[in-house]
Image (cartoon, rainbow, N blue to C red; front, side, top):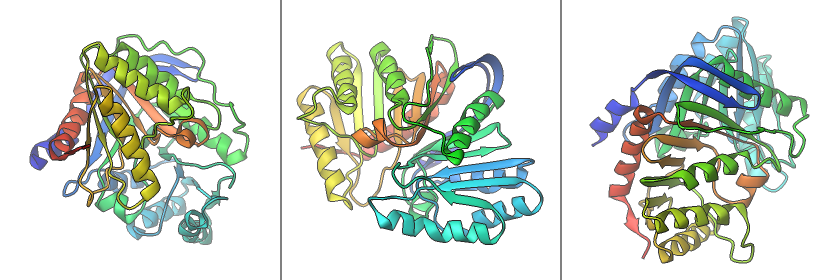
Length: 361
């Protein structure tokens, strides 16, 4: 199965798609590469290592966690800066967990020592995105932090998109975080017409923007055949019935109720008791309402945040299904609508995980 999955991972999709959201609305030829990691088959890090040396003018990096655990990658970034590429790096600083700041600090200091513009975000806002932008057109985003476990051990879902319109959206988003001008509610996607034709929707989120959940609920409510989910963290809030994560769970239950095959694969979160309890409560709630749910192996971390709808629509990125991720964090996601060839790669990833999963009870 891993060999079959690896063959899917080298898929490159070239197609004419509509790019919509945040003021961009155009049809263009786009290069899309799914980057899917499972233990024993890694695509994300090798792709980055090959990509960084191709940068001509700029590299922007926005990360929740960027550790000095792969000096080859950081050395390539330093080499890019040395040949004149403008490099900007933002890493998360936290006012609630000093360990987050401590893990990122050596990288910030290393980059600064090489004359690279690197800094922390505002400590009052959690930057949970995993985003890199090359030359303002090649965007790599998804679930992978830059640390040893993410690069080598965890199951991850990422994507690379080569398109100037997608690049412009995320470059503007990055620049506003860099300048400290991303105010609460300040990323307005406007009216997004998802339609049925091949469409890419960039989804940057900041505090109080809720763009991801708007697009996701629209897609879930349109599901006709299947909804397959791989989610690191999901929460059900019994005392906050109208929370956004509850609304997502309700949409899954409604889809199952109208005959859609709904399957949710959750991480066991064995290393984090609070997250483990949250996932267990969400799993029980879904299972009690007719949704098929499985957990991963406790020895493996499934860190992906991925939804596949009708084997043609995909939404993925950094957003978990809990309060802070959906409403308060800086997050970066993308929706690829009406692209079955792309969805096939992630569907195979889901099927690989689902077969190894454990029932919730």
